[in-house]
Length: 373
Image (cartoon, one colour):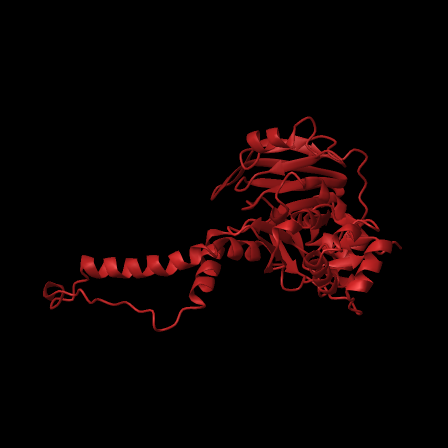
């Protein structure tokens, strides 16, 4: 299926719109009908393992409550001015992950989750700014979207669209926007993962400092007499401190790709794949792959990169391993379409390294047998 960008090619979209300006695509998903209704979404929001919230408006003020919720909570909401939002619905209802599969023109590790919201008439979360890219797909009903400016004096709209089922609006980071339900409606939000500078620096420094010991210290064997006596921090002292930092961080630069790969594939703490009840050996795996349709668990994130020595590092759910370069076709396939029809992986399994990699993924829960019910 082509990318849901209307007449635009992925290259044109990325060049002209990505992280630059909004794009409305009418009929991005022709004939789209929401595979989830409001009652089913409310059921998910009653689960303690699901991240959800309700945003309601009264007297011009927005109030947010965090789930899990009860049926009594929903019964008390009334028929206007509230919105239920549920994160990571693609992990809870795996068949919905096919929507995310239409965005393969973007790096797989950048695709975060499918958030689904159900709103009563007038429901909204208010004008706000997101610090990540988002595709807003109208599932059912109608929603009015506005973009504009937002400051202490309030929100001022500069553009406005009414979205019908199947329409999609792309919004770049940092653009103030406001969506309001025109009658009951459901919206699917495809969010993109974007680590903040604070997160990157914090995580990198933690990783870089882990192997250090007290043996690595500031030293000044070149100390001179004119640096003492008055408490002044000399230029030489600052240069020594800078040199120590530079030398310490330089030692971690070679490990930077591994750190970044493990960081961006790490799932949320409550969304790790679950290993199967019965672990397989290589022979059982070969039989399973030959006769069963397998799928990649929607909670799983996989990325890879070539190493200077010609091997590959494969990052899976926050961990990584090195595999031979000859496994690149298999690694690319594992990162591609989520479904593996019976026999798809069989041709790879004669290789010891390939069989070991697939076996680790199956026994770790990253690959599972499809539920065809």
